[in-house]
Length: 103
Image (cartoon, rainbow, N blue to C red; front, side):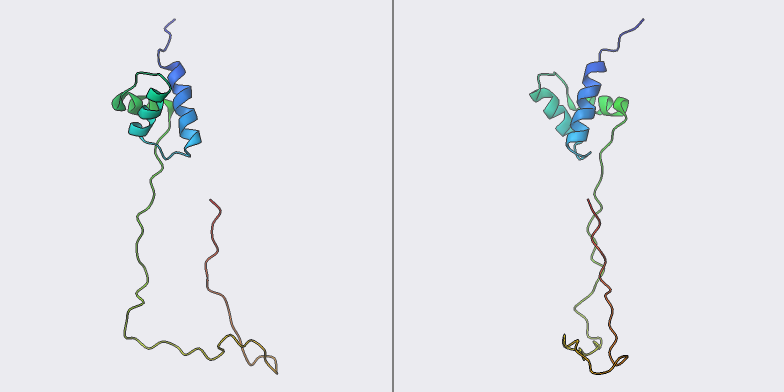
């Protein structure tokens, strides 16, 4: 029966991955393992992460999708935040904002 020498380190790697919500790569994982007293380099940490089945969660790059500096006509603000009306069906409004997603 062969005993895996990395068995104890795998649980440490999974714990670090969980604590950091998947944001640590092999460099920072190896640094944390060294702070805990393990002699682990960056490449071994990468191997341990693969063996543990964890990977880094990459953030998407911010991309500008709105061009506010244009010379196109802009619709006038007819209500000017005056939402009090005398008759029904004279003023209609809606909300086009996107709700924030829970992190």
